[in-house]
Length: 211
Image (cartoon, rainbow, N blue to C red):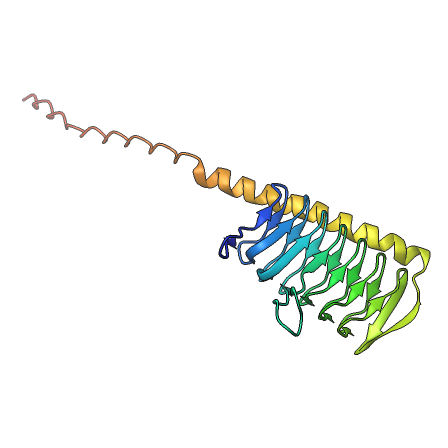
């Protein structure tokens, strides 16, 4: 895995987090217990902070970044992600806030200062414009995103299931890495001693013929 400091900031990652070898985490980033960062994801906290809670999964190819301090955004804007959040493949989260138990559909984009309240599902490919606040308990879809309907009981239950499913998958990957590391560090088996060469057979002389 690539975990890099930036200036005075070094990523703070809980010991139970799975970070794939191909993911990149830079700078002022904190990641809570049992979370998972999947292949080719980039979490770049160079010009503001990024906080990711517990049991949250950042899936393959996702990008998380922030906004710098300027007269257009005094103080800059961090990205804050809560607990038990599922961030789907190739999502972009930029200087926004995602509260607990949300599911961000594949390929979605959430822009600066947008806020996604707890227990929200965002459909794949949606775009949340800057500053928009998504109300808790609803399904949102579209570009720009629109509120479609309240989540039903099964969908609300799935938000918790999804987080726990990725927590368990994280554990399986960590176990696989542990097994591979153990195999790599095990001493090589001793070579077998060479087999002794077979003894040469000597032919006995034929007995003399009697006349």
